[in-house]
Length: 189
Image 1 (tube, one colour):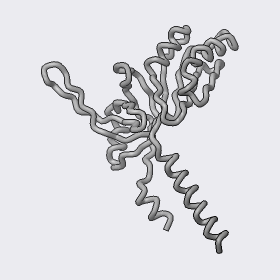
Image 2: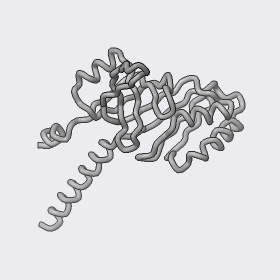
Image 3: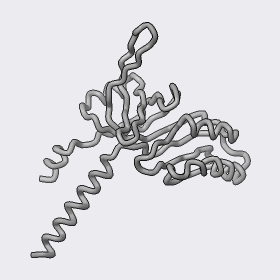
Image 4: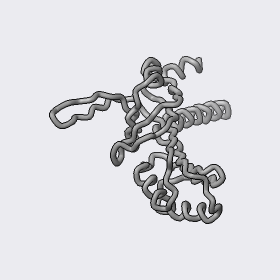
């Protein structure tokens, strides 16, 4: 009886932990596309050296010099400053021409107030744990996302512009809506 109770309790803890881990909002990965490296391992060493300064925030770094991709996997709940990372790569003579990102957060309202009192309301993806925001580019994918009716979402897309330090524009390529806890409980029954 005790073993059965222990197994049930451990199972519930694992399910709770798994749900909590998936539900946490954060940047999952960022891929900087740079011109294919003609210098091979020398370029890899240069980029590793530049990224060493961000070591406390980066879980893993993958450098594919044949395809010209630098992929960063941040540590949980750490802020990745895309503006600074792009600047560092540019200073190392590997300026990114494209930035792709996968990020989980909540869809919120964002309003920018311009001089003269004009406002432009938009939707943004906010990473609650880090405070980072991504302005969602208007279009068909955003309309589909808003129709889904959930706030927690994982978006894979492209960052064509860093509007200002700490604020990026995000073009949605695809998204995955997180199931609400109530829906998960119903599915378990």
